[in-house]
Image (cartoon, rainbow over all chains, first blue to last red; front, side, top):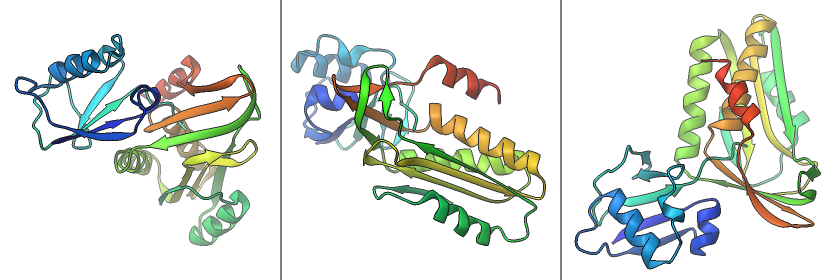
Length: 82
Length: 148
C-alpha cells in the first residue's frame, strides 16, 4: 500500500490529510497516479495542476517519477510561507 | 537553532534567552512576525499553519546553514508556530547575532525572505467571510530574489 499525503487546499478536496491506497496495475509513475486519482475522485483536473509538486519519501521529485506500492507520496500545492 | 511549535511563545522571553546564548556578540537583530487582524477578505478570526515534517524542518535548517555560510554569525534562532493561531499572536521569531550589525541585519532579513516564500507551510485564514488557503504575494518572491 502506498501512503498518500495531501496538504493545503488538497487536504480540503480529499477531506483528509493522509490515506493509504493500493496502486492499481499500470499506475507506476507520478503522472499516471495524478491522472488516475484525479479521475477516480472526480477532482476535475485539480491534481493535474503544474503548480502542485510531488514528494516521494520526503523528497520533491522531477516528474514523471517512478512510484512503488511501498512509497510515501505527498501532493504539495504552492507553499504559503509563514 | 530551529524550533517548530504548536504552543504560543513569548518573543521577549525568546530574545532574552537568545541574548544569553549569544553572549559576547557585538550585535543582535531580532524580528517578530504577528498574525494580522485583517486581511483582504475581512477580519481574521484564526490562522491555521500546516507543516510537512520533516521536510519543513529540513528546509529551514538548510536556509539557516546558508545564512551561516554567507555571514559571520555567532548564533541564530528561528521559532515558527504551527497549528491554530489567533490575531496578535507571534507566528515567527528570527534572531541573529554577529560581531557587527550589518551581518546580523542581513542574515535576519535573508531568513525571513526564505520563511515567507519557500518554507514548507500552508496557511489557511478564517475570516468573517469564510476560510481560504493563502499563497505568497508576488512581492514576497521579489524580496527573496534580492539574494540570488
